[in-house]
Length: 119
Image (cartoon, rainbow, N blue to C red):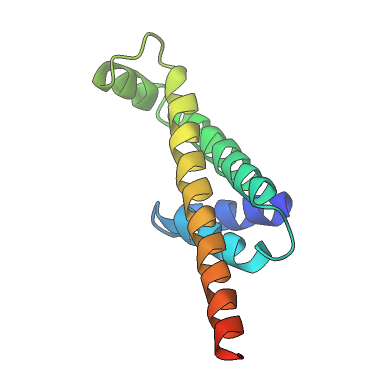
C-alpha cells in the first residue's frame, strides 16, 4: 500500500501543485478504509508524505546549491539549514495523514448512509 502511495505522490509532485499530496491521501483513506485499520492508513500516509518530500527538499536544495535550505533556515530561525528537509517532510506527512483521515471518515459516512437507507 505504501509503495503505490509513494509512487503517486512522486509522479504528481513533479507536475501537480503542492496540494496533490492531500488528494492522494484522501483517495487512499477513502479506498482502504474498509480493508485496513485507521492507524495503518494514517501512519503509512504520514510516512509516504514524509519520505517523498524530505527527498524532494534535498533534491531541490542540491539543485540550488544550498540556497533554499539557507533561506528557509533564516526565515524560520532554524539552527541548521539541514533541518529544512525535516520540516518539509513533517509538513507533507501531516497533510497526507490528515487528508487520509478525512477520506476514512467520508467512507464511513457513506457506508453508514447506505446501511441506514436499507432499513
